[in-house]
Image (cartoon, rainbow, N blue to C red):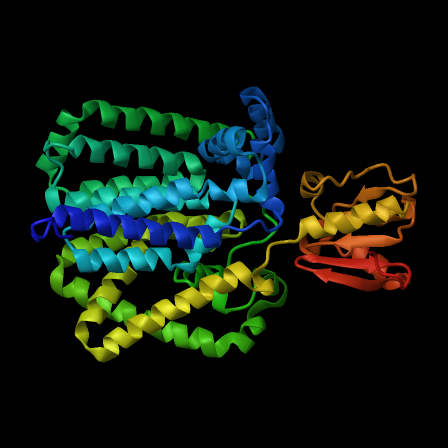
Amino acid sequence: MVDSKGHFEPAAASRGRLTIALLIASTLCAIAISGQSLWIDESYTALKAQQTTLLNWWQEMRHAGGSDLQMPLYMFWIWLCGQFFGSSEIALRAVNLFWILPGLLALSFALARQPRMQLAVFLVAVCNPFVWYYLNEARPYAMQIGAGLFLSAALCHWSERTMDSAPGESLWVWVFAAALVALSGASMLGMIWAVAAMVAAIYLAPREQILKSIRNHIFAWLTIMVLLTALGFYYLWTLKAGARASDIATTDWKNAAFIGYELFGFAGLGPGRLEIRDGGLQVFRPYAPELGLFAMLVLVLNFYAFREAWGNYPRKKILGLVGILAVPAVFILVTGFVMHFRVLGRHFAPLLPAVIFWLGLGASAAWQRNGIGKLLVVGYFAMCLSSELALRFVTRHAKDDYRSAATLARTALADRQTIWWSADPNTAAYYHLSLATNFNQAGRAFALVNPSAGDLAAAVAPRIIFISRPDIYDPHGVLADYLSRNDFEKTVVMPAFRVWEKTGHPVK
């Protein structure tokens, strides 16, 4: 920026860059958020947001149980936002911006002394398909990413300036403290990553600086310890109360590979999640060319990042940080194997800022090399944009279409047709579809969750059957067997739903 006398003003230039960066990030993040139908887990989030009082919210938390009970701060946050913005699909997802955008700005500010690295990390973050996907999800993962960005910003700041008592330093301590609590309260797994962040801070700073920071900011550090201890006891109580993640699927080596697949941004270039869930590895074959090309670009950036880090940073520190991050990652994977719950990329959301920083380091180093390096960086960002736009707009990546299914069911009910609904009842209720559990009245919609053969024999015969995710709602194949033995035809296909009718006339 230049003043009226033609003099360059660095501060004004910095503010100008910050404003432009904020506009770019806001635009891209806004594009990521959609009004698509809520899927199963999001509808449970919506239930919390719809409660009119805090007491009702807590009662719903206790009633729902499961892993939602182990997301206390996120569920409180979504309830609070619901009082102001409502519980529509867009409103539930748009509040994710309150975590991602400030986190991005904090990390950019912390890297202000390294302009090239600052720009590279910023671009990697706003173009990361994982960020886009979970911006568009009413679950705690954007909150975890945002908290992770704040923690990364504080660690970057301290790596350059140390934990001293300089003016403004207390702000960074409180940022770190608040981000630790947010990450720990967003979910029980988040607390594991928060512990890793604390260990990283201790590891990066000299012992005397840590002691000095504790003396200068004793209240902040005591607040952290009290709140984290309270959260720890709360999570122990939830475990005693029986809250835990779904055990419908388990963890194997494919889950470990899929975590990297998501974090590094491949998801939009490949098959949809429902295809992967139903079809296994063979569904990746049609997408092999673009996935292979992107894998090559990611590997090149990783190579440049490794060479840059190994040549310009203390190697002992690099290996130590890798070990610190590996411990919670291995712990979560082993727990998934032992406890028989499925570990996915979203459970590693707090790790994403480290991935972003690493790829940003690689992109910055590659850009400085030569024309080929610049071409590789441009190609990487182009494919990232392709991946995230596919996640947002391509049908194969669409969320479970409960809204359309419920609309079809309500239309059929208006014609007094009997319906069997083998899908989530809570999400049906969000879309104003009333379900009955008493199977002896025609012209109603009946909820079928893991039915027995006796349940189907006692129920009024349907004209229409809505089926979603049979591995959850018909795990023993009872309903599938019923379809094979009776005269039904598949008339409508939509994301995560198949509609079967007794006659040849499709629902309108």
